[in-house]
Length: 247
Ligand code: PEP
Image (cartoon, rainbow, N blue to C red; front, side, top):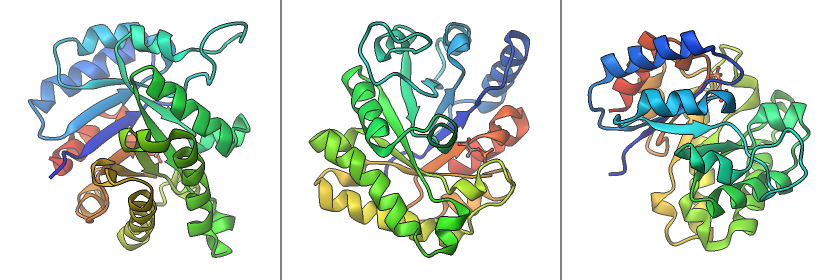
């Protein structure tokens, strides 16, 4: 059985002092977990968090990267730069980037490709809006988003992590029911199986208001291989509890 993956997405939160308290609290409470844990932190804190996580089993993650290798792209951060700080996972295509930065399926696919080229595991986010769900378009939307990444990455698709994050459940306190989440995960699993004979090793994790109270039920579903956790990843007790339910 593959280990579950619990990844915290700090988004644009944190400070030098708050990060130190949070990471030290997690390290003190976590022991050696039977699942994989990662922290996707703002880029300016990578050096600090690399230091705080040194010698631990928690992996360092980033929240985005440029699709370009190097050059005149003011404000962007390259995969090679992230790699220098020991980044193992990089979120691509988070709905907040699709929404506020107009990232397209093709751009997300290119970013996944760049992350892989730099030796990192892209955590590829897919998910429908509330309007799309209500219009009965959930399957079509998530399959279209994932298809772009499969198409661009060929056999390397077996090296990615897929995160199903219904947009209407992110930061809203509304979680997809276990049935809703499992149903979409099964669809994504099938799509991956059709694309790769290594699909069995691709984790499909759930994100969207996962918390200490609902994580155990979500993580018990056959096709839910972990969680991408926003708000609850900023609270030591809550994140530890989610980790415990995955282990
Ligand atoms: C996220 O940002 O990926 C996320 C799932 O956030 P939250 O857990 O706060 O809904």
